[in-house]
Length: 266
Image (cartoon, rainbow, N blue to C red; front, side):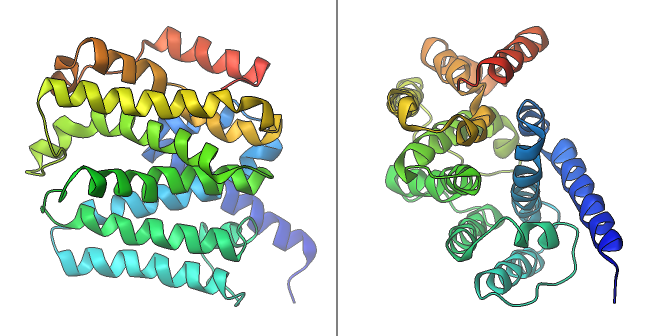
């Protein structure tokens, strides 16, 4: 039988591996987690590491069947957590099992299922399909992350997550188009502006409910630290989307995260 010390060391090693996965695959989110408290990091890094691994699964192979198998592997792992079974030994799944309950595992299963869209080159059917994709991926991830830290109204977390997902999507459009994907239902500047306004409205709606969000739980929303700026950039200069020049300077990034770390505001 393994000693408690060995178990603790395995867990510490797994958390370090999760942090490194997030650092490599999603450096902006990594920076946001590092602005949170150490106790918060141990909860968020496994959740975000799963997201990185799932998000990249459709892109690491040209074979759709292999991509489907990779996503199914994660669905099977989440099913083990959801059903309370002994989980497979894995540097992400093992710590993830300690921070997810049955409901959260089910939400993340829907996230993995939604990522199947990334495997193929079919466009979104309409705006509602695109909005559902953002909600089931970015919205779901934010909800699970915030809920893992404490009580949270689902609509608040999903509003922040969808707004953030939209801002990230705008930044990813040049790369998606380079891979022959059709990332938007309507790519006209007017449509981009309307879309960005919709995202900004969701973010502002969530912020109006800030008073009911526990400060500790609110640390999950640090991940959306660039969202408002990016959405406003699209509204003011939609040409920046195609040019791939959305985002904020390194100095502004650092000061923005420092403000959140000290104030707790999101």
